[in-house]
Length: 318
Image (tube, helix red, strand yellow):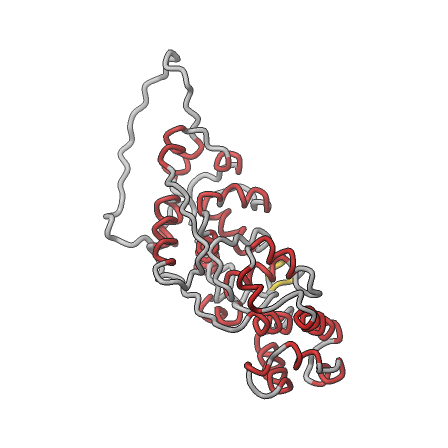
């Protein structure tokens, strides 16, 4: 399904040869096997204080996905930092700083990206129902058209975003919505969302309290809301810290570029590759979008951040 990644989300580099080689390394457990002596090549590096631009990363040989998913080096495994536990939103005091610290220590390649950008901002404070309704309206529309329809929709509900409530939306007929440019199909999506709120299947409070898996399961029961839409909602509206949108093409391309892979990673491969980012995979994904932005593969994030917070569709195909 076509998805418009208006990126206020934002998106990460190719691995350096030394790191890529270390990941793919498979030392023998036997100390009796002789090895031919090798010359040690001196590597030059930039001063630690100097920020590295993602566009400065040298191109390295591409690696098969298995070489990164299944590293066999004991030293690499021993050096991995423990996974912190976190259930706090990224907007909680100090949480983003903890996320960046963890990602820097767990992934040297991602650390270079983090050092190249200002920290991400997650500042949407819209109620869940409003965010979900807006995401439905924005699906598969150009930015200008979506904004126009949304403005009319808010006016139709009563005049302000605070008036966009389940009862108000349920009271709008398909004809009312069609007059402001909402298709019959989207009208049915909005009515289904409002209905699930009215009968108690969903509520703003229950959405805020559910864990990620339960939330994914129940929101995808709403007509017109798929897995990708829920992932975007959890990251940019609820500020959940550990969401990995495995079906997002921008994130997948970012991971391919970051690790110098030969092929675009599949969803299950994404889970394994990004395991080290837990429990802050939302932030890692944000840097994948920034990487793709810098390489000109997706539009500039600064323009689309606010829209992507609630828009559940984009120009990228899942």
